[in-house]
Image 1 (cartoon, rainbow, N blue to C red):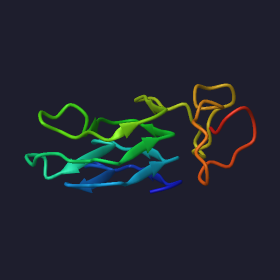
Image 2 (cartoon, rainbow, N blue to C red; image 1 turned 180 degrees about the horizontal axis):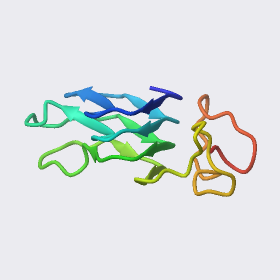
Image 3 (cartoon, rainbow, N blue to C red; image 1 turned 90 degrees about the horizontal axis):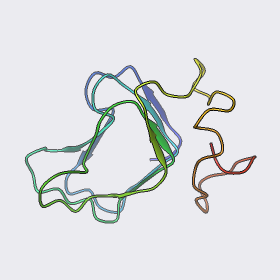
Length: 117
């Protein structure tokens, strides 16, 4: 899942069926009222082996991290903030924490500046 904007959702903005293996969740902006990212079903033994979550902005809970017995996904640089550092046009606000703080991901993050936004 690459370069998406998801907004105004009441439930999980991104729902991933479990097991959910080798997914790449890169460069997304997720602005919802519920969970930003959730594994489903919630009572299942989580296995997100090989899944990577990098360079995203999340306003809600990412519910796939602290599950007993879980194989959690790999997290890189992400912003977790109920008040995201972006404008009404979903573009990072100048000089905010979202500017030039992303990871360089070969084949994914084309950018200008010191690092991906």
